[in-house]
Length: 254
Image: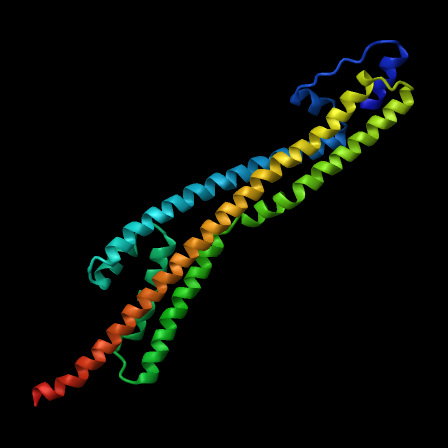
C-alpha cells in the first residue's frame, strides 16, 4: 500500500522516490485506483475500436450504395437487377430493394391485381416490408453507439471516483507520516489525478465519435428512406401503367 511505503520511508529518514511516468503512476496507485484505471483504459480501447469500425463500415456502405443506385437508375430491368444482387454481399440498401421486390412478386404472383383495394394493400405491404428491413438494418448498424454514449457520459465520473479514493489514501498516508513536504504529498496526488485524466481520455473521443457517427447514421437512414420512397413510387407507377394498358386493350381490339 502507498500509505505503508510512505510511513516506512519517513520513519527511517529515507527519501521517497517515485516513478512519475504513466506506467509508474499506475503501478504505485492503490488497488481500487488501479482497477478504475484499468477499466477506463479498456473502455477507451473499446471505444476506439467502435469508432474505427463505424468509419470503415459507413465508408463501404456508401460506396456500395452509390454503385447500386447507379445500376438501379440505369434503366436495367428491376427483375434482372433483383436476380443479380440477391445473392451478393449483404448491404442495407440492397436488402431494402430485395425486401420490396420479394413482397411485390408475392403480390403479383397470380397476375396484376385489378381491384383498387387490392392494389392499395399491395403498395402498403411493399412499403411495410421495406420499412421493416430498414429498421432491422439500422439496428445492426447502430450497435456500439449506446456504449459510446455511456462511456462519454460516465467515464469522467468513474475517473473522479478513482481520484477521490486516491486522494483519501494520500491524505491518510500524509497524516500517518507527519510530513507535509511537497516530496511526500505530490506523488500521491499525481497518482490520484491520473485516474481523472484517464477518464477524460476515454470520454472525449467517445463523445466526439458518438456525435459524428450518430449524424452519419441518421444521414444513411435518410438515404434508405428516400430510396424506399422512390422504389415504391416506381412500383405504384407500374401498377397504374398496367391498369391503363388493360383499360385500353379492349378498345384497340374493337
